[in-house]
Image (tube, rainbow, N blue to C red; front, side):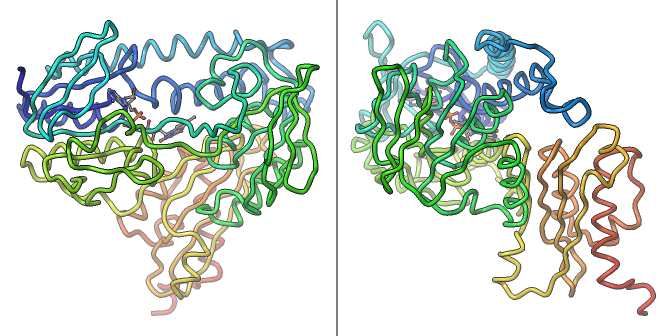
Length: 468
Ligand SMILES: Cc1cc2nc3c(=O)[nH]c(=O)nc-3n(C[C@H](O)[C@H](O)[C@H](O)COP(=O)(O)OP(=O)(O)OC[C@H]3O[C@@H](n4cnc5c(N)ncnc54)[C@H](O)[C@@H]3O)c2cc1C
């Protein structure tokens, strides 16, 4: 039986980063992946495909130019599902190639097959042809991620009633679509299809959406969605989903109302992919959503030599944070120092328009009783915004009145997921409002919105140098 210093189950962001980290520290590492190719949900059904789809939809629809040329403007008149898929396949090939090269360069071995525990130190890998292999490990990292939650009551058929994995294989673009679940994934796909002129209805039992985002940003976002005729049915549960004889789908809401559409995307959550791991053999149990609990500093499970990282441990369930978790877990596993990452990490929602945020929301600042001031800038106040024909886009910063430090940055609009990193750096380096007021920003840029928002807050906070 082969023996390894670290066996990693899953080749998504957490697994691959952890594996490469341990290999760079000179350890013998094996990655086990059941999928046809390495990369995990992130590369094959999650982050990269959805972002590629978004980019393709925005380019082919001419979305970014509509501020100038009107809502009817399109770069390509007839956009097909094939148009969307073509770019996807090229992007995914590149991603896999880079990953395989990284594994090869760092001498990380990888094996295709489904892994499960036999003992806490031994894993059995079942290959496609049914053959099994056993491996022994000093440490094991479970980076198995999640899969879509698929309740029995939903008549999934992969054609008109789908989960977010299946959505990538659709043959035709629907004229109308209902999205059940207004979480990040549901909202991202709802707005991408709306940008392709599909009539979209979003249904969620909660009366509000994206509760972890600053309310003012969410209000701005919802205004944008309603302005382009997207329907949001909030505070109402989808009780039943049926396929009608005419090929349409019908959703019955708990108030008796019906929604009829061509396609239903069921995006009401994901569950940890732990069901086939035979956790009991390792002395582990998962929660009701298949997730594993870990020490948040070391990513050790209750069994000290078994680590878990990435989406399988729950919030924040991002590719970006999963990579960091994997790296830290691997360092702890091989006995290397694992420095804690900076306090604030960015959250990116690649909807149309994008939302990105880092640090405290205004609601959190209020809750903590911190005296504060906000600074706002609309993208249409920047020259770059005029050049780009932007009608929407808002950047909001929150500063402490006591320390003048930046507490949070919240952005909705074009480029939000890139722009947020300026705020993130200032936050983690404990910068104050003066940073934005005193520094020169490239002109014309959307980043200039930082200066405008900084000045907006500074005007109300008073000039500290004059006060002395
Ligand atoms: C539609 C969608 C959009 C997203 N968009 C973003 C985004 O824009 N930005 C962002 O940061 N995050 C995004 N995410 C989240 C991101 O994809 C995840 O946070 C990330 O993929 C989690 O990485 P992971 O390492 O935990 O595992 P995953 O990427 O989930 O990979 C786990 C791997 O483990 C394998 N595996 C599972 N069980 C076994 C087993 N028993 N044996 C062998 N292999 C096994 C699976 O086949 C899979 O390949 C998105 C997710 C989805 C679904």
